[in-house]
Image 1 (spheres, rainbow, N blue to C red):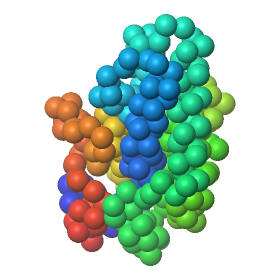
Image 2: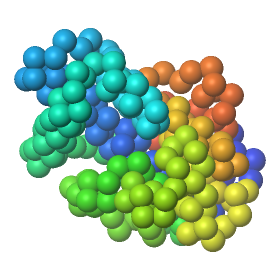
Image 3: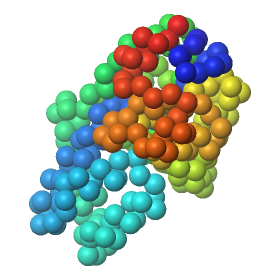
Length: 226
């Protein structure tokens, strides 16, 4: 399979999950805003965008800046997760534009597919179940794997290095899809070609340097695939 912007023939595809396959980043953003308001925290709404696909360091900086105590931070995270879980059950979690069509296309062409996400295994399983996409993937890696194998989180290359091993294909025959700067950097660090489909934030100058190609959605990717 060929995608415009990628030189070599593609035999395997590795996807991020949140903000790329599903609209969960938007749900987390909305949940962050609500959780903070419920707790009486005065945090500018656009500041939560820094959490989308953020590295562990960036998230720690955010929490240190806006939360007076560790308990306040933990309560905020817990409430955010509760709201997202509730909204997921209510049907607000959706596939991003063109995802279903693109996954079907890849499956019909016998490509290997995997997920390399920074979210927890239980969340990934629930999201795949709700959106009915589990059958497309040969494997998925989660934050549970990062902890279990003592890997470094994105933007380190670790989770993509592991994903490539699971694929059993050379880097030249793989492509990664990511929506965040840290994810794009992680794929770049793993020396894998990466296509960026931005979600909440526009691509930065560094993203444009790191990404092999940038598309607006999976419908556009499919239009440039043969």
